[in-house]
Length: 438
Image (cartoon, rainbow, N blue to C red):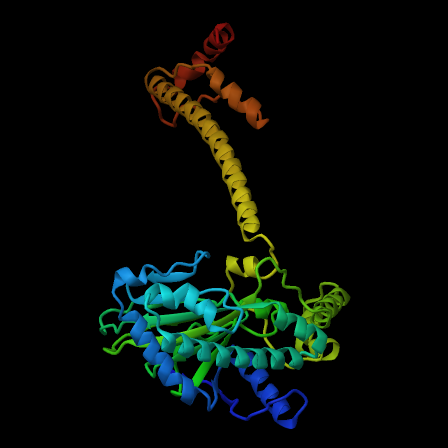
């Protein structure tokens, strides 16, 4: 498996503001990196102050006895402490206010009844640094698509934040299982800080997995599917996983995740929606001509009507994409799809039963026909006695709308000793046929 160093973008400059030359340079770099990889490495001097304390805080909290860690419970189904065979996680959901009271109430005072102010302060510093960088990067992304700052402010204000502390045990070379299964991030933007032990892997368009290397004082920034959908698929969300294979060191990772506030619909901005409408007009003008359709330059259309540069459509996705990106009630889409699936299964079952019944009838008819043919062949072998066709042949004739002719008696074989007798008895046999009762 090959390794790759993602594009590195330096956000260390103080007072980085929209409209300045420094801002515009970084904005272009962010757009190019996300277009190519869906992720990049963000370095900042402030991580030198926050990085080591947050790693120490994670070591401290994960070293607590299991019965203590189980006390951490949040209202949401994803919040609190969770364990898996190769990883362990603390989920701190809906941390929207940058103060210590929230983290003390939901985490610190539960795990340390006597209090742990240093832990709370460290976690708060990490949240402040990550949230500021998240807002800067998302603003740059939306600006690069020509969106109005009024819309950008609304987008930023209607955001909630989650923090996750993650621990991945080292795996021997023989254990190839991922510490975190392959997935797309469903949120807006993810910022990951790790303790220098690599393990993140992303999948290229050709299906190859590549290892991501990251400097100690950097975040790995990953675009989520919610933001990808908001931008009409112009930026890809990378398929990724975590594997700590062949490493005896424990991997610690602190993640900061921004996402739309619950119950809010994520809408594609009008500036980006223009691209979809213009593309459809170009396809309509082609009128199904293959050469004309292939000649459509989607990137040129997007650049003309939405002010963007080259990008890519979303590739693979999952059902959670719809849940987080436009469905107010996450269960409604699942319920509808489940009902449709049940109806399809019921319809297929009915068709299958009808097919089985027809097959049984056909098998019965064929069995009777086979018995008749065997009887007729046996009789012919003895005296050439004619047997009338059974009623089953008439039924087959009616169902298939074809006329079944009565089987013809084969003529005598040349040089057969019965040839002359057959000729002499022709009139007699004809008379017998006319008086034969079916």
